[in-house]
Length: 218
Image (cartoon, one colour):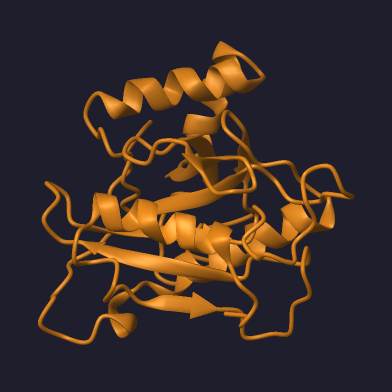
């Protein structure tokens, strides 16, 4: 993380602290391993261990789609930042007595970074109601899974916040199969089809946790 004052970053941290008292301080954080300039990619990802949920999972949250640093352009400047950050809930067995960073699935961090690069390059606009095929397993090959696409909806537990740069939304990624994408397209080829599928999935999976070992929608 940069030494530049980061009111946007702090606002995201505060939202996580409200949702996960005592956990956000110990949550692993993953920065970029390659050099990045502002507007060239996600700055970092925090992974909250939600071990007490009915389906234990990592709750990953990005930093960098929105204005996070004091030096970032203001909304009325040449603003290339979005008004959202991504979240991703990944099912996992979590042992809070063991080191946490090594328990976070590496593929989940890499997936967020790579999809984020598509957004920053202008190749894709991935917001609520959108969907994308990733060209293979969402795990990038290992471990194996039949989830090959991502849908984007609202995070069910993180409401909009004010970061000092404006309103910020939390957009959650959900791993799905190719068949689920086809089902959404049959309902509506745009945003509505995605949202209908996610609403149906939430009836049995209210936090929309992605479990690579079990198809969460067909």
